[in-house]
Image (cartoon, rainbow, N blue to C red; front, side):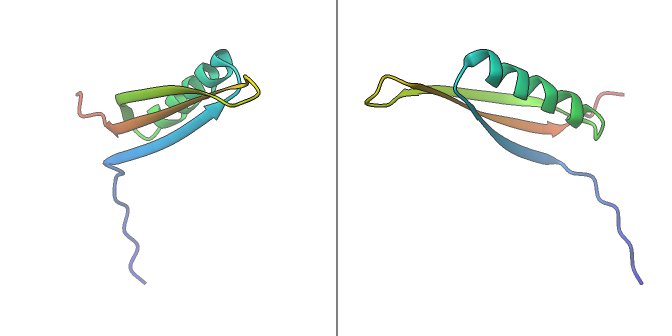
Length: 70
């Protein structure tokens, strides 16, 4: 049996919430989880959409990349 452990180099995650504070909290929690596997935030993109009833949906895409700091 061959077992191989490769480091994750890049990871893209998507988030959504109905409140901006909730979205920020979800992202912060995932940043802490990804620090454990040595990933750091490379880029963040966010957007808000409003439906016909006036409800807002906040979305974000976060690109994590391996942290090469020594």
